[in-house]
Length: 351
Length: 265
Ligand SMILES: Cc1cc2nc3c(=O)[nH]c(=O)nc-3n(C[C@H](O)[C@H](O)[C@H](O)COP(=O)(O)OP(=O)(O)OC[C@H]3O[C@@H](n4cnc5c(N)ncnc54)[C@H](O)[C@@H]3O)c2cc1C
Ligand SMILES: Nc1ncnc2c1ncn2[C@@H]1O[C@H](COP(=O)(O)O)[C@@H](O)[C@H]1O
Image (cartoon, rainbow over all chains, first blue to last red; front, side):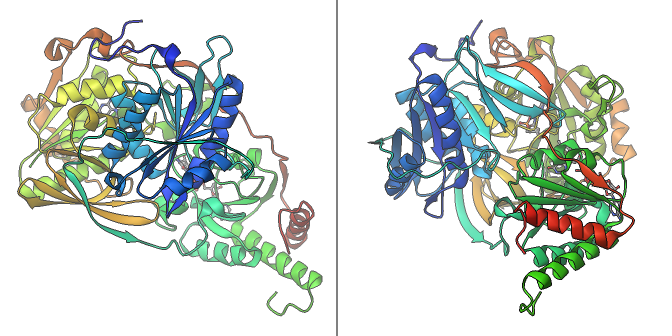
């Protein structure tokens, strides 16, 4: 194996531990980071090593304990006013600097938008391999290294990817692909305060941030989702889905074609290039069931399909399916829900 | 402003099919297209050129057949195109690809670099950040709008999960255009015909770039694909019916969901 002469030589055997970068969101650890701690525990168990959490930011030290409760054995904290604002290259340099110092074997990062932005830069600084959007991990029994498994070629195939000779191996996974581990207040761990070496941020400065409320429960948190596709035919179709969602306490989401048509907002897209959902029920209405869409609903507990084409692939990937025109099926479902609500709770005037 | 746009020539993954009998992927006859997300980067660059003048050069690292994609980019209004191609670049992962592209790009004089958000065939969204890293230039992803501020600075607005953010960047810088951020213009025949009459597409190979072979292609790639497989199917009940009495079927389904404790009524 030849290695580019411009790269620092490393000894892979010196690298140990499964690290997780912990993104901070509104003063708390982001859900995606917690989910990666769950993955890391699993890998650390198989590899008999420790789980390290990395916290970068300002006034983030108090979150270290939280990371331990969720699975970290050691938390490396870089709490400094230099890290008050997130800048991709700045955070990348900080994480890379810690990785050079402490030599973890693996770094896991949740593929939030910021995670996807800065992690490839970390990989470059370390001249190492990065595998994006993993949906599972394998530990090779012989080589004892960690492989990332990810969709490729438009999600028609999955590739099992290995990082040879370079460490750490870096992986990202989209939020929600893995479950959030239980919080265990009895867990103990070590907190290590660090001073990563970073150059001054130059050439990029934030001048304004406008937060917007998503108005509704984000689809990745919803228990019930009513999702519409191209088959709705128009934006009005979503009004009907909204009515159904309201009747059963759910939220509305959509396929990419529905998003492309402008019938529903981009942040509500389900699928490989949208979000992975973990709802109890996922209604797929007027959605054909393309592989990329199915990718986002693998973790849904129950999939209910409504489609007028009995040969639509979604019917091969659902728990329950009703073949029919949604403009008839959805009103029938609303009617059934209201009827049962009345039966179970006759006093409820709203039902 | 002189702008360089990275584009990739990809199989049109929307027309890929699975051979139901053999369970294999039918790749033959799948036409290639410019990665759809890169059309937004091209449009953003061409809009900036319309507004502030300068030039737009597009670049791809690919086998020679990608010339067709570059002709498309010229047809949209790019001034020049570079095809970076050599057998030794084959099998590159994103580290080696970005290294090769960065070395090629550093031969060009540019103020701004634009990339697409991700590719539809590999969809890693790595290349932008990695090129910025090799070139040591500031970068920003998910950009929906850009303006030139003068004095070697640009303003860029980006969209995150729950916020719009505005930034000032010092040129040279790299931006990744967000999906859905523009309405990409169509190809104009008069533009495209330039490919016939002028040497608008330049081909660079490793003689041109002179890169160490162990830093590029498969050899310069820390990651390798150990194997590929099909996406495992999720086990589902597959109870499908084409009801004669819709109300009855709907009621049956709702009751069922309540019984399974998925729905609370
Ligand atoms: C790299 C890549 C990433 C992608 N990522 C995503 C992603 O994240 N999410 C995603 O969804 N897609 C994604 N896609 C697109 C995907 O391939 C499909 O094009 C898309 O999912 C199709 O959306 P649809 O099911 O709404 O539309 P269609 O495939 O057009 O299906 C419409 C369905 O509606 C049915 N129908 C029509 N009229 C009615 C009616 N009156 N009542 C009931 N049913 C009706 C039809 O029978 C049909 O099955 C991606 C593609 C690529 C290449
Ligand atoms: N081989 C390539 N040649 C030129 N640009 C590329 C190439 N691969 C990726 N890119 C650019 O990098 C972006 C992100 O690609 P990716 O990291 O492959 O998802 C794309 O939208 C392109 O703009």
